[in-house]
Structures are given as structure tokens and as C-alpha cells.
Image (cartoon, rainbow, N blue to C red; front, top):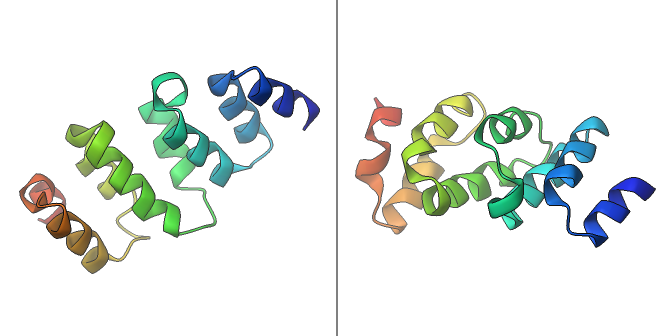
Length: 108
């Protein structure tokens, strides 16, 4: 934890995410990547961590994040989470943002 806090103070987000992963703090790792995508987000690492989070609300926060930050990879995220998420809620989220056509491959 001391090393992690030092990394956060120094704004070393990628290193912080790595340490969170090693400590099995997947919720924190996902939140860090969402909050600091320019330096901490890596698609493969994110997809690995999101499947291990405890807080299911992060699934929908992740979908909104991908919609903004990496919309072309949104279907891959949704497919990865397909057994864990409420599909109606995802559709509602996409309808609300007027992006339902973007997730048609996931819906099929």
C-alpha cells in the first residue's frame, strides 16, 4: 500500500494500476483507468480487470467510458461482459445517448 500511495502521489497511473492488479484491487484498477485514460488505460488490461470486479455498477460505468473514449471497442467490452450484465440496461444506456446502432453486433 505504501508504494501504491507513492505512485498515486507522483501521478504514475500506469504503475498504480499494475500495483492494484497485483493486490487484487480490481475495482480500484478499473476506476483508475477510467479516471486517467491517457496514461493508465490499456484495452487488454482493462478487459481483464473488468471481468474480476466486485461492484457490478462498474460494468455500466465502463460501457459509458468506452462509448466516450473507445467507441469502436465497445462491442468487445460488452461481449466480454455479456454473461454478467443486464442487457436491457445496456440498451437503455445506448438509447439514452442515441448510440444504439453502435452496439448492434453485440445485440445479435
